[in-house]
Image (cartoon, rainbow, N blue to C red; front, side, top):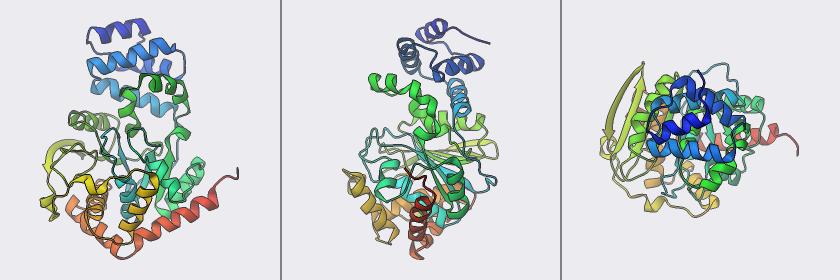
Length: 345
């Protein structure tokens, strides 16, 4: 069932839903560059104003996956993505990237999907480069990293070439659109498990239901009530969990895990290099709020990956991975492996 761009725009003006098959058709027009920049801008702005529905988001994510360059991981057992929508404006160091090394050292396989900082001073790609990791690898090389090191980083622009048709419009609009929430739903390795941070409490229920429709197995979608798109130490965290096909929503608090409350002020950075230094400090065993929040988020990722029986169990495993030196070793291994696999310039 198709819909013309003009009909779709009219639908958004009237605050009416664009149905699944219609959204598939519309999104294919957008991703293939068949819409004019004016019409594309009007439609994605209209969707934002009327508020995108779960059905619209799911269909759009399916098309983004369809157009993406995939990474084939033969065994997806314990494969997890640790990702945030960004846009929380917190400017903290790269908590999810640091958590990735810890989770991998504790038994998860991490296929991390990320890009450069837009709303933050340091995106995951920025800190990965500051750590000396090659981020421009072939899909085959990324799959090899996952198999050998337990970590693969997928630099978003390399896996979503069709986004070049959308990028100029997004840049000129300068406001959040549906694409801000689609990125975390479109892991190129098809990770069945995910820990996803979101920038607004309403997105917890929306994103976890989109993941359910997209076939995810175990997902935790989190929003820190202090505004962080992570499991937070500064406030309660709202969690939407998908497990065994069922969705539950609940709150967790730092004290549930024996952790002291801490504001994110001590976690703020201005540059990718500062983020790198804080990340390495955590992996070397420096104690404090930075290690606490990394272990809490790595613990949640280990639970999502079905390596741990609960977030609390994951937290214990995360602490052990740092204390043994295994988490720091994963960083060194990933640097070495990506250098060996990098395509010569």
